Structure formats: structure tokens, C-alpha cells
Image (tube, rainbow, N blue to C red; front, side):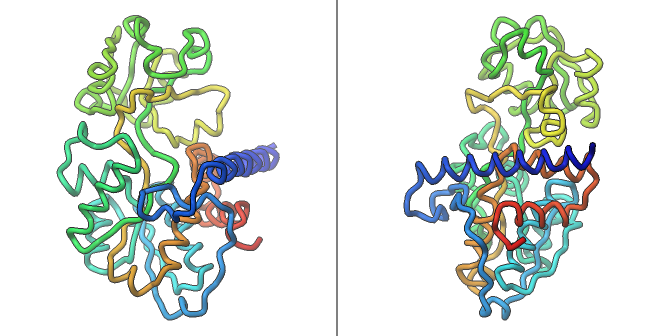
Length: 330
């Protein structure tokens, strides 16, 4: 049964990525996406090994939770396929530790969330972080450039807070987007992290721009955000858009669309330094943006689920993704 489930999930990943490729090909242009903050080329072009890249050593870092480990492995394995000498340091801690490792040369680059970069590194108030991923990525890149660093195009997926509920609740109340809660939220209980009361991507944004009031708001530990829905304690719960549960139990949970684009951009950008970009040549940025072009929210949920639920290693999950998508030879 588990093998059948994994194979079915792999099929879903392929279908989701195929849909993305077709969509991007239909509306894309000749630009490579590196200047406008786009999500990459949107193709399943296979990575070609360049012998010249073998002269360049790159150390890929990441923070130390599932999604970051998977992303770090994807980038590292892709760069290795392009011919670079790659080392990995995928056990870094917070964003401050990761950025320090980059600044001191311990690593060459790592994946960072646009909203985290702007608020943690550059003092942008959460409410001022753009919800548009291209705008957010451009703003982050401009700030990084002032420090001798730079960042590439954002991923298609955003790992961000979202309002979630049980599918049966959504169907019963006719909920597909956050605005649908207008006139209904007064009868509903919302659960979120303790800091939710002060966050624009939580209660502040829901009560302000959306104009919602709730029957009750209750703080909950992040690890219980799904169990309060399961037990009927919460009608709504603040989830993360790339949670593994959203892929593993897609028929049970749904997230409501942030139709007013209130929540800040949680897309990922690969942060590196200008010296490495110059030394590594054009294959560096091209490879990173190529392999992330298939990372939609549905695909990222699936990859996280393979690690958190199916207990595969992040190294294997990343390798399977690159092979299934056709970026590397199987």
C-alpha cells in the first residue's frame, strides 16, 4: 500500500509539473527570467555537464528543517550535474546563522524566503512586505546588492501562512477564498500561533484588510495546527502553504486563497555573493533557476510529504525530483 501511495504521489508531481510547463510555455517570452524576478525558465531541459565548471568549487547551504533540506539537496545535486565541484552544509540553523555563513565564505549560497530576508535582515515591517513575489524578490535583491550579495529569481511556490480548514467545512460554508468568510467568520473559531495576534499574515491581516471578526481566536502550538481541526476545536487554523499534510490528505484539508494578497511573499530565492556568480559563470544561475521552475506549491507539498510522512531522505527525494522532471538522466 505504501509503495502504491508513493507511486501515485510521484504521478501527481509529474502531472503538476507538466501543467506548469505547458502554462509557462504558452505565456512566456524570450527572456530568461533573471531580471524580472520570474520563477525560472519553466522547461524540463536536461542539465548538461560543462567541463569548465569543474574548476569551480561551490558549497551549498540550507537551514535545518525539511523544506530547506530538500531545496538544498535539489540545488546541490543540480549544480553537481552541471559539472561543479559541490560540497553541502545543510545543517545550518536560523536565517541569521545562514547569512553569516555566506558572508564569511563558509558557504557559497543558500535558499531564503523573501519575507524572512526583508523582515529579518533589512528591517522591513511585515505589513510592508510585498505580497507579489516578483516585487518582493526585486526588493530583497536590491538590499542584498548593497552588501555585496545577490539573489536569483523566486520559486513558483510560496511557503507562507494560510487560512486552512477541513474540506467538509469549506464545502458546507462555500469557502474557496478568504473573502468568502465575510459574514460567516463571526460564528467561527480561529486557531493560530501565539504571535498570530501581531502578524499581518495572520490575525492582523484578517481583521484589517479583510475586515473579519471571529467568534474566538485561540493560540496553539505550531505542531497542533492540524489536530485542532481534526478534533473540532477549530473551524479555521493557520497552516503553511507547503505543509506535507496538504499533499498526504488532499481530500481532507484545504487552504483558502489569499484573494486580497494581504499575506507577504513567502517565495524562496537563492542567495549568493557576487564573487561566486562571477567565478562560476552563467551555468550557476541558469541551473538554479531551471530546476526550481517546476516547484509549485503542490509539488513542494509532495516533496515535503515524502520526507516527513514517507520517511525518505531529503537526498533521495531531491534526486528523484530531478530525475522525474527530466533535469538529470535517470
